[in-house]
Image 1: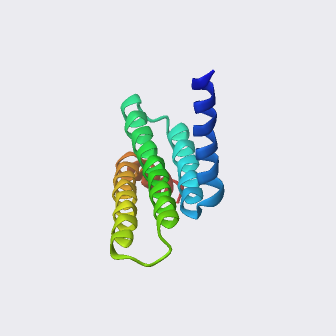
Image 2: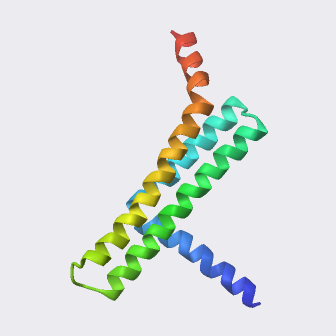
Length: 121
């Protein structure tokens, strides 16, 4: 029963992140676009693995960033250097995972989309 309750808390955390965080909403939309393109282009199992890993890392990094920022805001109301560093480093982690996801998406989809666009002209 305790594990089931913990699972509910985790779902609530995901829901909170999506509802309250603008960037998380953007990541979720990008996730649906990537999954839709992957299904349309029937990507390989390896490409699915790379895509799902990239998506998971971005969503996870955004949620960890939200957690860190919320905790820092709770701990201090003043603008402090250490608080700024904590928030900036967490945001930097999100940026790195997003760049990785962009490269992964480019490698998986660029040729397929180019062929579709050029072939359609």
